[in-house]
Amino acid sequence: QVQLVESGGGLVQVGGSLRLSCAASGNIVSIDEMEWHRQAPGKQRELVAVIALGGSTNYADSVKGRFTISRDNARNTTYLHLNSLKPEDTAIYYCRAYVVYLEGPFGPRVRRYAWGQGTQVTVSS
Image 1: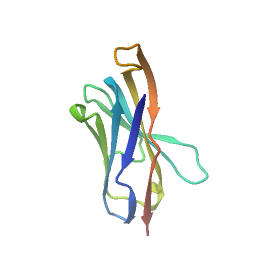
Image 2: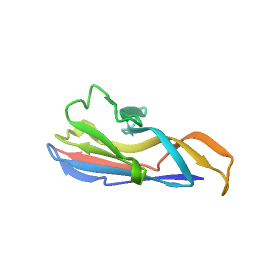
Image 3: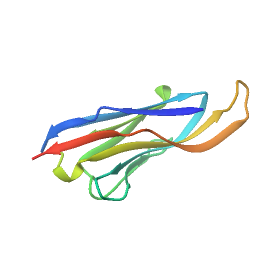
């Protein structure tokens, strides 16, 4: 099985910064896309940022120029740097990754999206 664990959330003032981390563990062969999503109270979950295996990135318009996604393939980890935070950035942030892993010691290979449990980011005004 595969597990994704986020960390780095917290309470920050308007204009502040945070760095979120998401580490994948398990019998991982490779990880393709790594994504950050967020869900604010009473709202649908939305895609915030995506990074491909090769490093290309895409961002939601609402975070462009303020958030930066990166990854460390050797550590199976993705990061989200949040800068110039606004109250509307308050949400639970989730990572998702398309993971190839072995179900047993020698296989079979499984390909699926895996979600983390989320980390709370609260921006106070």
